[in-house]
Amino acid sequence: MTADATLRIDLDSTVPAYRQIADAIRAHLVARHFRPGDQLPTVRQLAIDLGVHHNTVAEAYRTLAEEGWLDLERRRRTTVQERAAPKATPKTKARFRQRLRELIAEARGAGVTADVIAAELLELAGAEPGARGGAR
Image 1: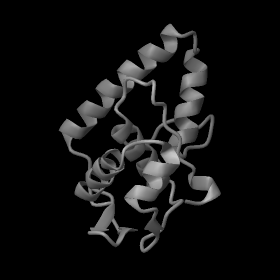
Image 2: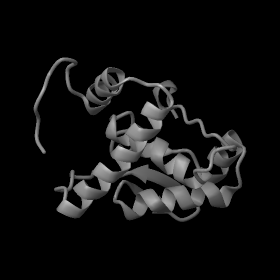
Image 3: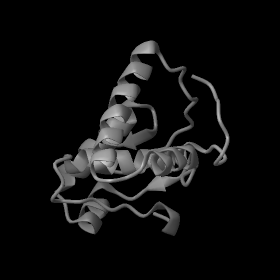
């Protein structure tokens, strides 16, 4: 993995390690830190690097392969695939909205202000701070 694509997981988190790995890799894929044709570390190597069982990494890779991000060549390599962005369905949008609502409630409960949440969301989504609007 490149310096930009460093993975870190929290083994004390209530979120399963395979999910943390898949989420982190997906974030790097969306940010284009990996390009189609790039190879990811082997399951065993990433497991050693992260201090987890190899089945944990294998499950994360399978999850991303099912989503169309990765091509898994058994016992050989894991390659990033070209993936067209799917059109979001109403169900996908509703699920996202619910997850976002829960995350915002958690942040607000921890003292993060609405302005900070909005600025972070705009930055992470790729919009310019101060810009309003956008597709729904």
